[in-house]
Length: 184
Ligand SMILES: CC(C)(COP(=O)(O)OP(=O)(O)OC[C@H]1O[C@@H](n2cnc3c(N)ncnc32)[C@H](O)[C@@H]1OP(=O)(O)O)[C@@H](O)C(=O)NCCC(=O)NCCS
Image 1: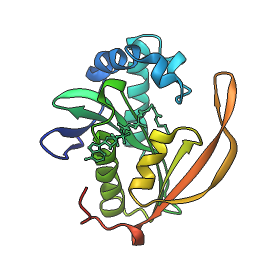
Image 2: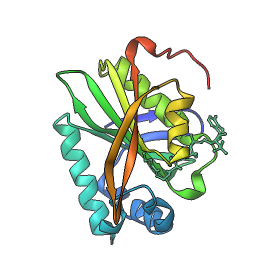
Image 3: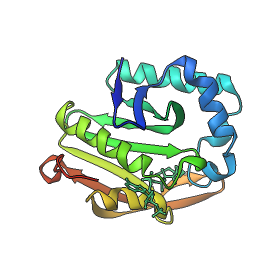
């Protein structure tokens, strides 16, 4: 099973059903904060829903259609990162992520995204990695911008969030542009 130790603080692990309780508590403790930018929060009502989500992620992983990893910070589940989808014909992976609000501001996600990019280019042979973030989601947009992604365009009304559409900013990074030796 996929386990990747980024540094002494952060480990990425393939989620399994035994993580469902901790994952649900993490979401339930900061629903309002997550809900601002994630459209699936209201559909996560109990541990069973988190278990179903994890089962779906395992299935996608087995079919090579996704890779969803728990981010463990000092052994505690802090959030989730992964490739939400792959386009193998064109060797493209789309990264998505979220953190519990008490884990923000420590560079956890930036470090996790660096590790996932390295894995995507070096181990999976991807040529292009995409991240999409809502126009006003400045904390999320700061991550691809910090890592040298190119801002490629604006997808108008690209996502429905409960009662309104938001525009998305599309970021892209090519394998030829990534220097895995860069230090952060
Ligand atoms: C998007 C999200 C993951 C960003 O979290 P974050 O903590 O700001 O991101 P990082 O972990 O990369 O941390 C960056 C912050 O840590 C600081 N930091 C500390 N050490 C750092 C390091 N080694 N490297 C980078 N940043 C570091 C940065 O200065 C920055 O703080 P600032 O915002 O005060 O400038 C989080 O806000 C979130 O989950 N939001 C809700 C869900 C969501 O929007 N998901 C994305 C949908 S597209």
